Image (cartoon, rainbow, N blue to C red; front, top):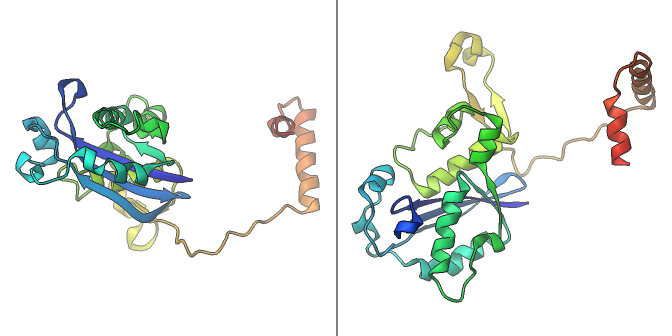
Length: 242
């Protein structure tokens, strides 16, 4: 599966007030691995940026004066994300802004959802961690993802960080640093996990099938559970699959 982890920065919070996209950052995942391919573009919004927004992302009006308009980069952007599953934190915000920009460009698609499916990692996090803070910084702390370079928000950096968070949140490769100088018992609250990505050159994992004796023992255990009046969920799952 090809996934694009995406983030945007904007001039403000509401498209209804004429706010625009000023930065798009995307990184590509294929088979849950970062490929190294990315898309990054600053955009001239043709309007002033709210001061509150500048304090969040640090992008100024002067910096964007010589940057291309959205209509000039829209084809390259669509080509990069076309057919992928978009992974976005608070997707309604970014999708709303992207669709607003698309609506300003004649002869292009009306909605990005017509070319891509969307996963909202904020909704996912709220389901997994109800009642807790689930912004990107909080998830970095929860899943031990390094965001030490994130003094200000930036679309490409946030997309890269979100990719690590998404992989960790959905069962990505993690390694607990235990034993020796990194022993969790000696570090207490400072013990951390480090995100480890599998090498694309790794050998396929071996598939070990159960022996006839093991299958027979398994069936006997299921029979014992059934004889004791237990609910044999394994057999229910097998019957549903067949």
